[in-house]
Length: 261
Image 1 (spheres, rainbow, N blue to C red):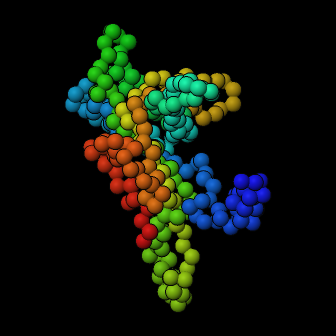
Image 2: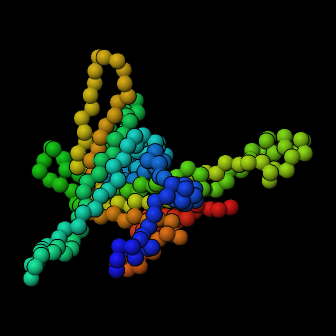
Image 3: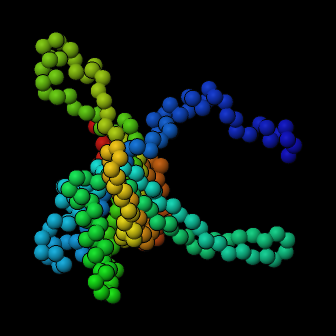
């Protein structure tokens, strides 16, 4: 095929076409400041086995809020493909052998009661205490699922009008269906990290200079992760094997966050 023949099917990058295309809500640029995180509780932090109380249950509202609201920045997981190489005749080529995962880091803003620090200090202490040479069972100290939810502005359920505002519209004779209403954020992705545990609690700096917000970095290892997108763009097929989808113990109904009503 000649170069002129290839020109007919070559993609173009006209600004007018690009502007028209990305105005579709699904293809707007993504923002990096819309996310939330949720930890499931490892067995060693559950009350009744190692601890007499339930202060470290990660599902408690205050603990959950510390780990979600104060997650100041999150490094999303990455994936690498390991390869081998082969040479028959001519150039060497590579082939895939497996896939590996890197660690992730979450930077937490520290609450004044330092509960975030307490949680991770207790987690590491029970996982591998510095008072002896023993390490707990793997299945007991890992967090079964760490969920990282990715949200985008608008596109979610429409906010209901407050009853007081509806009465005002009624007195003014205005049809509430004609009033513009905001939409909640739309859930567009879910990172499900399996069997997570902290391997590093970062240092914190104290100073006599100008006051600032205290932050703490925590590094996590994990076995694997799965990324789930919206149903209209998702097709898992057989890529995740027989154990595909969310775990039975921590079932999340993904589309409940994206009701179109």
